[in-house]
Length: 371
Image (cartoon, rainbow, N blue to C red; front, side, top):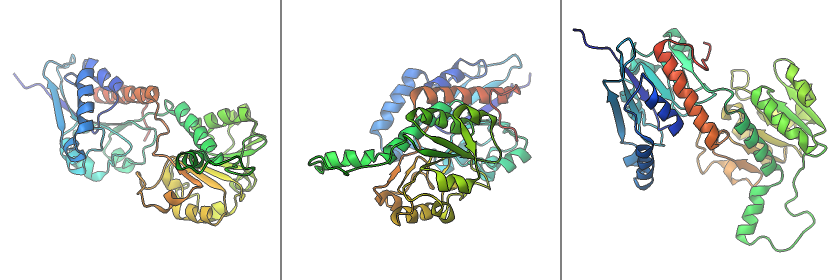
């Protein structure tokens, strides 16, 4: 009697329990840690040193987990909230049929070579996929799942929060309270810029860009401009005006970048870009860090070319603590938390797990990236 085939799956990180439970309940998977075990693991991580946390690779297998075809699965999990070290990633992916990864995991030709010819599906817990070597993946016939749509609202909310915090100088105000700088009321102390009667320019009126525009309109925005490859019919919903990028930059009081990273948009926001903005304008980026030339942004902020900037994405991530942008009061930097709500991350984990399962069984994925 021939041995039953075994499908190997590698998870590069501990993901929210909603996704793990879905894998655990699946008829394909079994042996993943229970919620209680995950809680204990999370608690143990909090008291271990980072080095100890990074050396904890758990493997879970169950020969009783079968489909009608008689296939067994073995799931390996890098059981930490911290990124898997490169050496462990290359080791963990060896012979894998499925790979579940995060935006911070660089999946390049080296990783694909380490996995070998068995790899049939990569499921990333992200809407972005610039961390994946798409050309190599396509050449090898590997399917890719990702998580669009589910983080639209959370990212739009964060973008508006970042815009308001930057324009109204909230971090500066908080620091003044803590440091004793709050003495008495002063007519122009900590004054910023308001949305009422303003012109907002959105670069990239896709799902997230439109969701941002919807949330900004009730603040009394007078004009909503947008730029992109072509006019969007859905812009009518927010009275959006399609204009050339140069016009958007010259006329907007707030410039919000919400476009995808592509060869055309990489480094889009450079010295020439900032030179066309109003000196009182506020710049916000929640798309991808590589869209912005950060050296040019620093120069624009220090020279008074623009008033302020708010970033939820940087290059690299995390941004080094000695980076010049972090020395500026008129630059608010967040640690890429656009989708960081409990419900959104749980839904992302579920979708990622479902994409992985579908890819392993040759079924249609809920959200497959068309290569």
